[in-house]
Length: 183
Image (tube, rainbow, N blue to C red; front, side):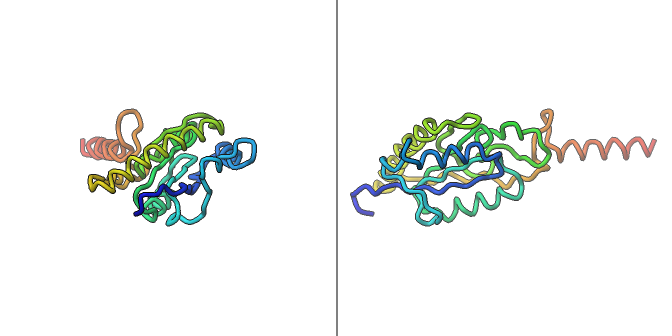
């Protein structure tokens, strides 16, 4: 890679949100907020993107898509979780099909909480991400860069409810039922 700094491109993925944060992401691209003044371009191809902007909570189906997009991006890359749903699962956290924020599927570099997250907070997170991206770029040039490990595969049965996973809870109930039938 050359020593010149290229303009960062970002790709946006909606992981089942209410679309409130998506509207704010689009507002960042309008002339009022103008994220392009930082040289940032929105792209639809993960192979061209440096920054991965994720909105919405993660469930079992979209976690694989999220991981595939992440894997298609070239190093160095930065992941930004936009909105409280992408950060922690938000109001959908207790739903049976929600695993949590996007950090259950891919490593996250910057969190931008809010419901819906304001365009100013998104731009601030992107600027923070640019700093992290430059650090990763310099580490790659120095040969000291180590990619963040992808979290282990998580399913809805691994979701924590009342301090135990759903899988452990179901197993405990099955064993209790079998023991009561034996007695």
